[in-house]
Amino acid sequence: MIASGYRRCSTLAEAVALLADVVKEQDGGDANYFNAQITRFEYSIKRLLQLCPPPCRVLDIGSHYLHQSVLLSLLGYDVYGLDVTLFTEAPFVRERSTAMNVKNLASEGHQSGAFLQGHADSFDLVVCTEMLEHIAFNPVAFWHRVWQLSSDKGIIYVTTPNAFRARTLGKTLLRFVTFEGIGLPVDDILKVITYGHHWKEYSVKEIGMYFSQLSPDFTVETTTYPDSDSANSLLSKALEIVPQFRSNIEAVVRLNGKTRFASQPMLPMTLKSDEQAHAGRT
Image 1 (cartoon, helix red, strand yellow):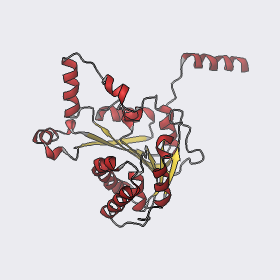
Image 2 (spheres, rainbow, N blue to C red; image 1 turned 135 degrees about the vertical axis):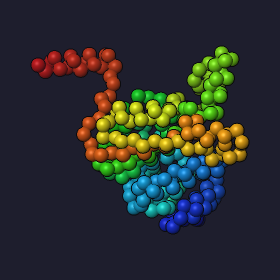
Image 3 (cartoon, helix red, strand yellow; image 1 turned 90 degrees about the horizontal axis):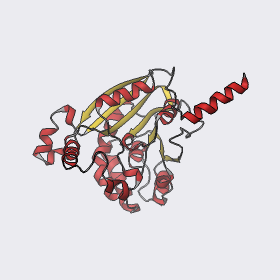
Image 4 (cartoon, one colour; image 1 turned 90 degrees about the vertical axis):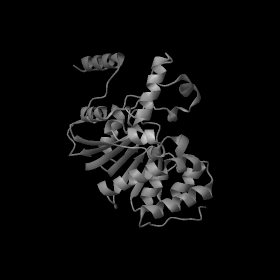
């Protein structure tokens, strides 16, 4: 049992300190990740407090070790964390969810949109931070389900690496001029667990196109912001001055009612089966 225990925190700093104690106490193997990502979590949660202050119901998709979910819970949000069973069934994650008042939900149906049945129109805020770049399947059914789960005036909050960030452009150019390849290096594909890959990174323009093509009900506000460690290098700090080359993209996607959503693309043989079934009914 986690000795630190749940308590409502009045400040983000207080919540971070409590979570740090929990991570240390549990010793679940996530301390290095927590320490590396905490500045990112702090940035996102400060923005969420501005966009949709508690009390409200939040769905944290890609909840991983529940770091961000716990911080939101400690600050007064009603939090549902959603991820694949690889993470949700880890013993320390299950213990953490119970002790820190987070609903820890598993789904292997992200691709089909088959998750959280019975929760339509339930969430004021859906959080998808550092998740978009990991999607390796056609995402229309997934986002359709997110659209269904969101309230009519809900907010979807997205952060993702900027495809035009200086460090990535430099690495891509080097691999190009040395004829090593384009896209993910082979070593990454073969030696990194699937959930670690950035299959596709986006530009600001692409993020706007992405959500506008999914539904006319979405309005998208985007901005770029620097990495927390940019100040440690004069070159990185200089490059982050230019908004287009900053390391990260933030997208605030707002719903204004629910009218229609993009159709799920279908394979030719599926379309043919549907046509045959329709012909049999006429």
